[in-house]
Each structure stands twice: as C-alpha cells, then as structure tokens.
Length: 360
Image (cartoon, rainbow, N blue to C red; front, side, top):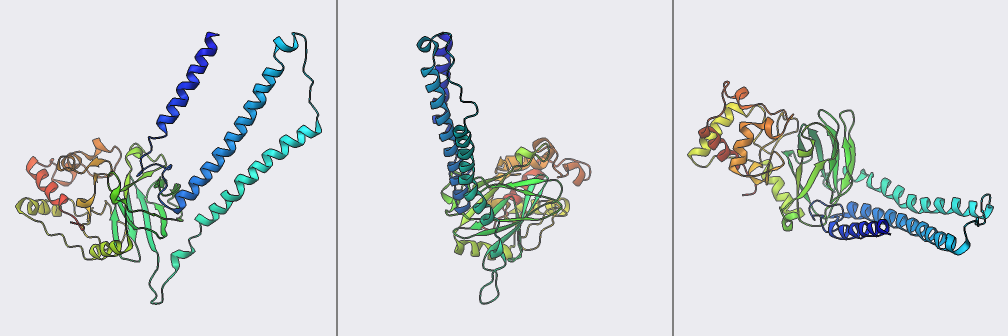
C-alpha cells in the first residue's frame, strides 16, 4: 500500500514539475517559441509526433488497466487463465496496420518539409537589374567563434549575425578546423558545418529582435567540438529590410576614428599587437585569423559569452585561455614582447575596442 502511495506521489511531482518547466523556455532561445516559418513548421512536426506518441501511450494504458481490472484474481479466482489470443489473424492485422498508418501520417509532412527546407534555388535569384534578391551569408565555424560573410554585399562580421526580417535568408555552412553545428533554436533546426563540403539551407525571421531580453536571438554550436564547445555562442540581430540596407552600407564604409587620448593610445597598441589577426573594417572577405572587430562595440557579449564590459574585455585580453580553453587567441606574452599588458595598456585597449561601432 505504501509503495503504491509513493509511486502516485512521484507521478504527481513529475506532473507538477512538467507544468513549471514548460515555462522555462526563453523567447530568444527556445525551440518552443518559433520566430520564423521554418521554426514554426518544424514545431508543428514536433506537435504532430508528440500527439501520435501520446495517443499510443493512452491507448496502451487503457488496455493495460482494463486487463488488470477485468482479470484480477479477486474477481476471476486464483486458477483461471484468461482466453489466449495468440495466432489471432484479426489482432495481428490490427497491430500491424495501425503502426504503419501512424508512420505514414508522420512521414508525409516530415519528408515534405525536409525537401522544402532544403530548397535553396532562391539563393541565385536576381532582380531586373541583375542584383541578388535574397541575402546570402557564408558561415564559417572556427575554434571557438563564428565568421559571417555577406558575399553579395562585400562585408564581413563575426559573432553577431545581422539579418532582415520577413524574407528567406540563405546560408552556406562550412567549418575551418573541426566539425561544428550551426543552430538558432528559435529559427529552425541545426545543421552541421563540415570541413570537406558546404551545407546549405535557409531560415526566416518574422519579428525584430529589439524587443527581446538582450535585443538578440541566441545561436549555438550543437556539435561537440572541443573543451570550449559550450561557450561557442553567437547572437542574431533581426531588423527590417530598410534598416538592414542602411547597416550594410555603413559596414561597407567603416571608418573607426579613436575618440580621446586613451582610445588613441589603445589604437596604437592594437596596431602593433593585434592587427595581424583582427580586422576593424566591415568591408572585405572572409578568412581572417581572428574575429572581425568592426562591430565589437555593438555586441552584448565578449568572446560570445561574457557581458560586454570594460572589465571583461580586459580579463579576456589578459588571459583568453583561462576563459575559453582551447581557443587559438595568443596569450599577451606572445604578442607584447614577452610581457603581459600593463593595467594602463589594458585600459587603453578596452577603451578603443568598446568604441568600434557601426550603429552608434
């Protein structure tokens, strides 16, 4: 009796936890709050498959309970064996046909959406003047950061993807070192980035990210790629098409002029120690050794996961390995004549980097 009560208490607790956990998904990160056509269609598939599984479980439970109630010993006696149905042609047909029908119901929309979401023919569409109609982004995954190139616009950025709303955005995915996986949970399913080949797909975003908690959607690497895999985040800023065109034009003509004596000093240090790996102009092509920093001051994170503060900028520069193990950024001693940066140098670098912006 006590064991039965404990089981029911456990079931009740799990039911309560399910209700509470259902509210844990954040709008900028959860697959349960889709923010575009692809995400919504995949979410509908999730609901369909969950519904089918729930129906199967309920039917099995009902049969199980009926069998227990109907043939309990207190009712039929100790020595009664229920009628055996082994070899029943009717039952064999029923429990063979029903699973097949359920699989067909699930397979038809799954196959249809798989082919639909893989259709990237619109990537090459051009208008009457010969200009590409859709935005295409070449995504390169690296240890442990993301590079985003807009080949038709001639601009490059990193760590923060900027895309227009209410239209298809096409992606060419590849990896520079090991296998990674590109995933924006609210926009759609993940897709691998490989070294050997380019994977292609599209996503859509039906709302601007400005109203979200951090003003961005969150993206993740969904493939175990090394010790800092969990820290390989990126952000997605969605804006309307007019604002996107303005942003793209600003990126093409990026000119960062250090403001103030401290920032000017930081620029000098950056030029002698960091410029070999990091570009500060949004115009150009992909392939930089380190992330492009043209929009560093517009981001909300340092290295993809730390809050954008001067203190975190200094901590990252001073010891990147301790914050993101396995990353390829040199330690200060390797780029500063064998010495760590002084506190004054770190202040100057942080001031300069925080001023790299195309939006302010």
